[in-house]
Length: 485
Image 1 (cartoon, one colour):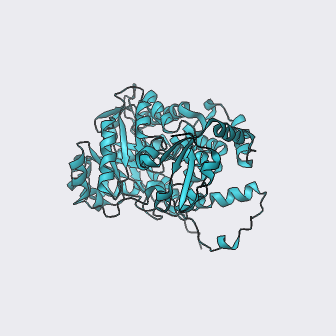
Image 2 (cartoon, helix red, strand yellow):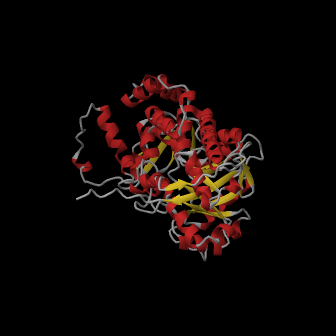
Image 3 (cartoon, rainbow, N blue to C red):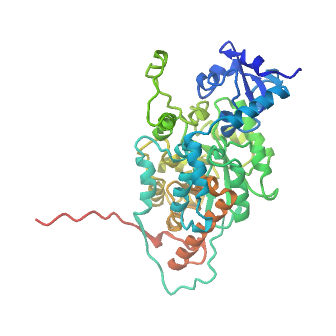
């Protein structure tokens, strides 16, 4: 096929014939416009033009090969067109947000000044593009569950034991039989490349260097193969967070792909079936428009004044094809029929479902409300963990229990382990760490948590994580004193 010109591509800019350019190649996406998870306008904004800058940060490199028929791959641009695109990119002025980020990066504090999770988060928010910051930081509705996830840990206090031999504290443990240097794993998080060009690869390499485990999201911005290739050794365990597609054939192909790549477990996500209301993320385009226009609101044509609101945000469209009809009776056996990998259900939010997961034979459960990003007023996972400990302690002997959401300190981790959790997942903090400092930031964050965990273990009077027992914590609900009459 002869190389294409920009003029040829530009002729195809309607819903009846729509071409786009991505990485100097042209694609016919006409048949996909109205099937695009984010809606047709996302594609039509780039009809007949170069969509590379919008496409690359949020799509794995193999997306077009997987989902667009070969006959829709139209070929490469000619050299003159490639040079024209390159020149246009170089001459394009930088946005105010890009200039802000450049200045913030110049003033990035040395990594050694980051001494806790809060430091890393606050620093990353300054250097992140606003769109990425809004996506990472957003929570559901009024952020009640997001805030309470962290506050829940403050309701648990320790009963330290003294006069115990605690030299040589060892915080290592296992997850599904795989060793981890500390009882922390990287929770599955989408779109790491929004924060750093290397994205999930930073997480993978950092996990290897620090000896912890990584869960990889179905909606990663690198392909599953690229992430597997970033492992420090072929034996480095990777866990897969599955958003099950409503089409069983597509879901099965995804599971088999990661199994062939060497992923070690399937974490079935059940706490994020439909796009949620994340208002910080939803407002990001409007904020950026006003920021670039010095606070002035652009007056649009009447056709754009319908009042319709795009509530998908940055990534809501990624889950519109989720299976909304999953059940204990059908879905778990179906996954068993596709793979021999261990199955962990991610998103347990009540005691009853924890019991059902055990009865379904799941090798593990994650107590999670999706980081407070889905249903607001869903209970904090720490409270669910406490309820299971009180009502059904037998669950801990029958399956591995993990928890994520709201972890800010090593003491939070130990409180969860005392109540029976085997591991604790951390998501946003690792996204912030890799966004600001890359792979080194991931390793540094692990070292921060390791230091805090080892200090707290020694202070509690324990040498190993299996010595962390319920008797070492107490739930305390202090109420403010009423004023005397």
